[in-house]
Image (cartoon, rainbow, N blue to C red):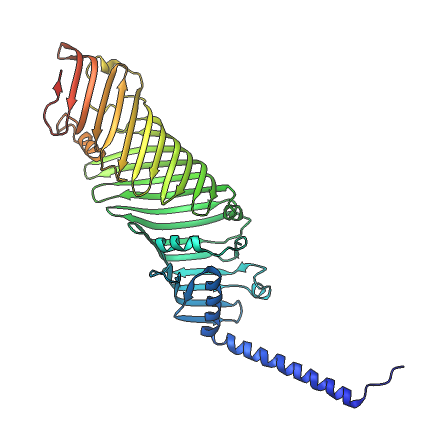
Amino acid sequence: MSEPAPPRRIGKRLLRLAAILAAVLLVLLLVAGWLLQPQRAGGFLLKQVGSSLGLQITASAIDYRLRGTPQLVLHDVVALRPGDAKALLRTERVFVSLPWRTLRTRGNDLTVQRVELDAPVLDLPALQRWLPTRPPSAETRIPTVVDGLLIVRGRIDNDDWWIEGLSIDVPSLNPERLLRARVRGRYSAPPMSIPADLAIAIAHPRRLLAGAPTGVAGIGTLTVANADWQVPAQVFLSGPLRLGRDSALMKPARLGIDARYRSPSTDLPFRLGLHGPMAFNSATWRFVPVQVFLDGDGAIPDASARGSVSVGKRLVLHLDGRIAAWPETWPTLPAPLSASTSPMPFAVDYKGSIDFADIAALELQREATRFDARFRLPKVLAWLDDIATGTPLPPLQGSLSTPRIDIAGAVLEGVEIELDDSGTPPQAD
């Protein structure tokens, strides 16, 4: 049986234990005092996050709530790349609520209760300057957000366009499950604006963030408009989407549009379908190659075509296809052209503003008759709408060649007609 420790040794052990307990208690008191000063704690947190991202992140006020589910509220947050004159991101308020288990595991269990952003403003040029400078990091993780993500009164600014009134509502987020979101906002690039309200679904968020293709679908409404006309539309888009560092590819994409072209004197319904790979980079959407299907009513014909379409600051397209039949509302063709029922091959080229206000080129053929023209689509649509009371001559520049035309009992052979949009009669040879 061992002898008991001498009283002096026991006393030393007790003193050492008391010192350790006192030190631990002091540390706990300091930590508690630090947590009870949210400005200091939040400032440290923002400094750590900013350092990991290569940004300076500040907030005018920081509030904590530790009772129940911990909450952090930041006011007037500014994220700035060092040396940059323009903030990358500003937001009036950031709210984050996360369970204690996320804090206890130091983020190994990446669960967040809820996230809210009020009036965030993202500067796209500043974002593009920052992206190449991002520090190398491990794989980006997607948190589980139990009660959802909400963004209200958001804005994205670019040099010559912006998105305002942006709201994003994600009821819940799990990186392994279907994500549903509601997105609303208005794209403006004067003189054009496009308000949109879309419901979006992403099959597998983690695969998308990892750069692997995953199914994405969107459905909703948007309206393309300027001061003189508007095109309200129901839209549907689906396909496997792959994200790159600064790009996106959906291959193939299926885009359906059910719309109406409206102006003070025109109301033309049509349906448009596009099928093919859709790529996004350098602020431009590209369908190359693309199949296009047009189902029109009234003055808009039924047609199908193949080619390319690019939509960004400007609209660029080249299409080769066939018009199924001459629309009944178009001017009646003279014989023998009017007797033909064969489809009409066509080619159209355009490079200009997204509202088709610039000049487009058209080649149209029916059997041995050939028509080459240059036109501005809004003027042609206005002419078609007023054809009953206006001039019978379309606002076109071009030429028509045909082996034969029958007019008022006369037969003209080897006809060539030059058209201009000045309102003067055509010149025939």
